Length: 219
Image (cartoon, rainbow, N blue to C red; front, side):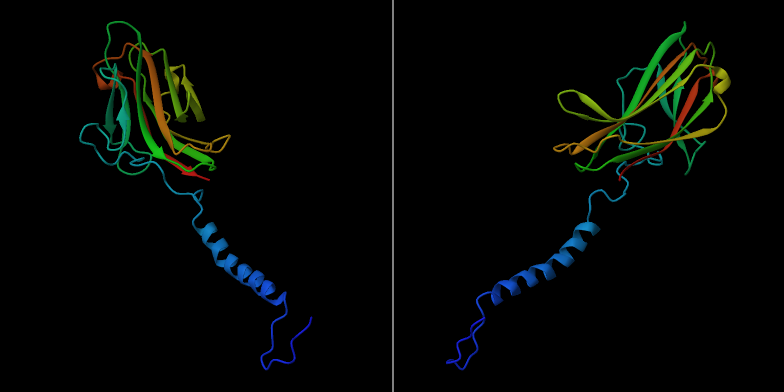
């Protein structure tokens, strides 16, 4: 390295300034890297609102949840039997003259970040089987709408006997097989139910299915 000795002020070598710039960048990267980790969009946090069904709504029974098309042969109600908290959502089969397939659903749209895997968990309770019970099918989905609805998570449970009723809460959990795709900023959390029975107006002879502790978190 050559310096100009004729000057009273020592000049910097030609590559000295470049080295200083490189070192400054390294110093700046450390706090930036920490900040990125701290603010990662995939850190676990709750995305579902009113997942414990503790808050009642104005237009729908539960705040932040929407119901399927009405009228339906399955009424959505509330129950004091809870997996956690004070209560749970109940699907109640209504009386029909003959054995029929009855349907209903609830759903909620939630914001998500692309690139994150999602974890869905919830608890269900096949509380009671009604008159002429044949079958109960329950489906939990997390999907997004592109050209067609595409599932990120799909859990299907089938109860084919009334002997399965009254055994308490079951906990379900699943991680999405793929992350949220690029460009997707919202997904739908949906629970569908199909009950095949005739049921009865008497609560003791009515098919009742409970849902509680719904959670969706990035991971």
